[in-house]
Image (tube, rainbow, N blue to C red; front, side, top):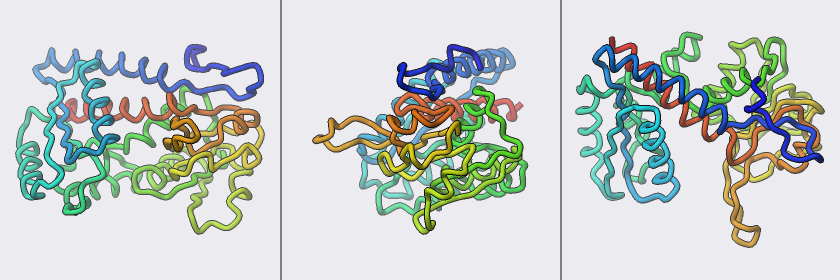
Length: 297
């Protein structure tokens, strides 16, 4: 792994920090080159993003995605609807984007307001434009080991493991969290890479028993600092997917699902929050959009 993508946070920290910002910048430069080549062939990669409501976090995510598109020379469209919009209006817009050959990727920002059937909305996106990888057809293809689009966060994690040179074949991988967005697809990717995979969740008995034997530990549960140093195998690679905001009484800062202070004393590699998995998630969304544009040729 290039030295610029690994840092040591302080003399008291033993773990190497996998710098998601630096890796994302490198990958985005490569994606911009791909986009330029596509434009020479008459194709301008385009991502359409739909935002419903005024959730502050969702608005930030969408703004970051649009800005990332601009920097990678990917054209972006953004449709913003009021929280009380009729779902039929959004479904009609998705149908229009499906039919537009100049649009290669469609993303509906989640969560949606309560009047929406989120599953129905995601299934309305054409599988060939489902750059989030959430459509049932794309999920099934991933399960069969023939993915069309890999969900962006697990895709980014795999890129980080590769960049850090983490051995995967035969490794014990433990995932804490079983969501359709991260946990389950992450398990499929690590399994395909040759890992022995354990998926833990809220019903798991003695969580620490499982995490302590993990060569690769992925935390994706949305619980601040849930994974502590004493739960980690010495030298393990720890990937923190969580992003949580602490209460104002604790400074209101962002933190992950891993207690970084204690975990970084034990792990071999670790991702920070912020600046770890987050930048790579958006980067892999761009990668999927470029892939969709290339397929359109």
